Image (cartoon, rainbow, N blue to C red; front, side, top):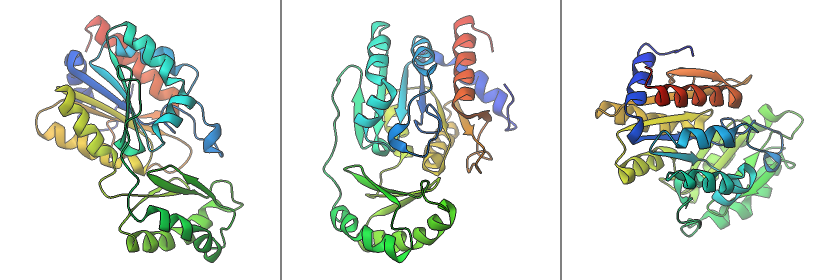
Length: 281
C-alpha cells in the first residue's frame, strides 16, 4: 500500500487501532463496481461480496453510500445477500441511496425514502428541450425518483456534450431551487442538502463511531471526503481512499491513498481486514 498524503500511514494505523468502532463507507460506481457506458449494466466487482463480508466481521459497520437509488444498488450489487451474510456475524450493512436520502439496512430490510423535491418534475419535463438546445438530444435521462441525471457517456463526443449541457442544466436547476452535482460525463440535479458528507456524518453519529474510512472516485464523493476531514479535526481517526481510473480524478489530491479502481479498493480492504485481525499496524 502506497500512501499519497503526508499523514496517510498515521491515519491508516489509527483506524486499524479503532476497528471495533470503525465505519467503512464506500461509493458504488467506480469504487465497488467498474464504470461502464451503460449505468444500468453496472455490476459489483465479483470479489466484492466476499471482501465486504470479511471486512464487516472486523469493524463496526460497512456502508455503501451512492448516488443511485438504494433498490438499484441492492440489485446490481447483490447487496441483500451480502447483508444476510454480514448479519450472520452480528454486524450490519447499510445502503444509503440517492446521496443518503434513501436508507436500507440488513436489519430493517426495507428502503426508507422521502418525497421527491418540489420543482423536480417540472425540471424533468424541460429536459428534452434543454438537450436539443445543447445539441445533445440523445443523452440518456435517468430518473431516480428523488433526482434526475443526464448522462453523455453514450454520445459520440461525450466531453463536448457535457461542456455544453452543464451551464444550461445549472441555470435551469437553480430556477427550480435545485442543486447540481457534476460528475464523470453525468450531471445530476437534486434537492438541497442531498450529499454524501451529510450521510457520513449522520451514520457516524447514529452508530457513535470512533473512526471512519471513506472510499470514492468522483466529484459526488468530495463532500464525504470533507466530512471525514472535519471529523478528523474533531479527533476521530479517518482514512480517505481514492479509487483512480484512466480518467482525471478530482479526489486524488485529497486522498491519503490512491488505488487502481475497484480491484485496488478491494485489495486495500483485504489488507485492512488482515491488519485488524492480526493487530498489526
